[in-house]
Image (cartoon, rainbow, N blue to C red; front, top):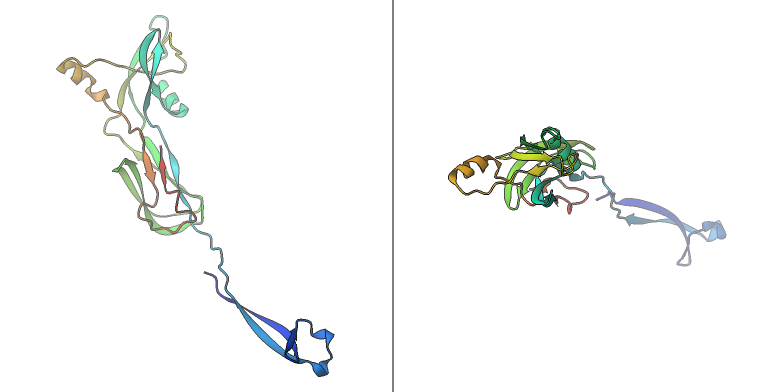
Amino acid sequence: MGTPIEEFHFISEINGLTCPDKNVFTTSTINNSFYRIITSTTALTPLPELVDAGLNRKYGEVSGQCAGNNVVKVSTNNTTLDIIRAQIPAPTSSNPVVFQDVTWPNIKWGVKNTGIATSSSFTIQLKDGETILQSQTLNGLGSGEERLFTYERPKSTKRLFRSLTCNPNQDVFVFQKAIRSEADLRMMEPYIWNDPSKFTIVIDAFQNVTETDETNNTRDY
């Protein structure tokens, strides 16, 4: 809230009437006086604005076709797909299908401040539904500053492959095997995991920082 401003205005009085311009009357008929107006104003004070800095390297799957067969393709952003594809040798005519165990990159997520600097401590959270996967407490954040964090999954290995006959320069496929025995389960167990269908980033989870916009502190990915 801004400080009230006192404005002093000079006016003239004649026979109980007021006139803002004293020059229209002679000085012998004017009783000069002052009146005061108290004006309350609200100053617009800049505030911090904490927003999420995005989430990258999420793992996803989508059904597809390869040489007439039903397959499962990797679904992720292009940057992450490039990282994954680079770990699998390109298929050739002598080796048309190339399988490779790949370590999926850790999740990257974070927060940035698009407003003025804040020295207040605040907490950000990465969640799967109501489950908190990771929590970070920051002791303030500068104007324009961004902080990124890494979330390491409990499991991160997938057996993937590229195929010469199925868009080898782009698509990466997920190795699938029906589990019919204990041996099959032991073989596939390291690969049985998926990311949540939706990650949620919560900024300033305990509302410690007064911001320009308090409605944009939660976002789903």
